[in-house]
Length: 312
Ligand SMILES: NC(=O)CC[C@H](N)C(=O)O
Image 1 (spheres, rainbow, N blue to C red):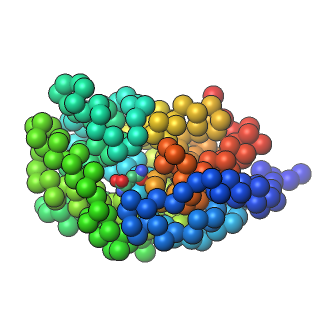
Image 2: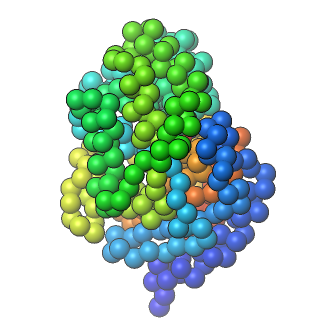
């Protein structure tokens, strides 16, 4: 009898092939100029199970920056550094229904704390909560944490993407100054922005994302090393946000069509997990109008429906 991983290995190339054409209606992000260089039609995926068995297909070896996917793990690090009470006095728990870089709701509600940690305003706030002696120290702590989660000592920042966003990130800069002006964000705004841009620029491939997702799928333990990397309560919080806000204002549709906790980024990466079973990393740089990978979402829909993986 074929095991599930054998079935996945057999079917994946076909599923990738049928999802690739969906890229044609998407657009590679260009508001961070360096990201515009990504290959429009690329699509790759890696799935990793708790025994350490991989199934990969397409452009799975491609490297890309984590962008918003990093927000899942900076939230966890901020929770580990500060505890729940402090973090959730600075950022809310509710989806917005707005674009990821929208400022709209910051002015509509008092005291103007960001609605959740996965919109840019919330993630910038979370960056300000990371402990460390200097911006460099804080960014280094984040990178070190990500290396442990990915079990990959070679993770590094993409300096070109970092500098590209540092120069072009006017909207994020305005969000951060708005939060500071409202007395919500503490600390030096430019330093906080550097921490934020820095973790967005961490380079990964699909296998790195799959390993990082597997730790969440296993409640904070890396099943392949037995290391306890995250307290289970913080994994629970992160997975809940992934389900309610992970795909921004397309999270409801994604929950219906795919039904797995997931987080996307503007580089076209998507991290997803099947609780207790799989970590998944996807890359497909062409984005839909909500900022999620067009072909990547299509591929996850196919896999989840074929494998009957929806958690709902
Ligand atoms: N959706 C995203 O991936 C956004 C992250 C990106 N660095 C930004 O702030 O705009």
